[in-house]
Image (cartoon, rainbow, N blue to C red; front, top):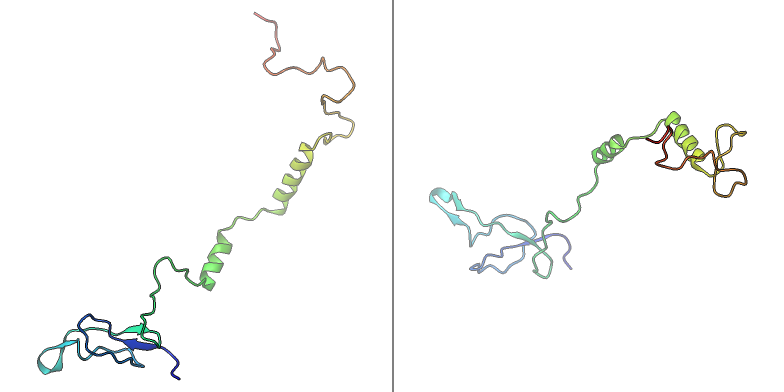
Length: 130
């Protein structure tokens, strides 16, 4: 049983049906000039052991991630400093209902039980109406 990579000429008019263990040029399809110089080279292509052509890797195939890709990705990500994280946590806590920096200060909600007359509605004027 043969294992490994195999090569075969797949040109339309090729008479050579043999499967080779090495790449090279197809000797029956390649055109030679004076002094055995190659004029038109015809390369063999990769095939399976059965003789079917192996699919080539196209642009849509994923590329392996290299060390440099990993390093570039890590460098491009912006990380927050400890002060920025603390500021975000404080802002998040402040947005929670009933929390203020001063524990004696009250945040007015519809559920609180005191007079809401001091709360000004949006669009209400501070001065006298004209």
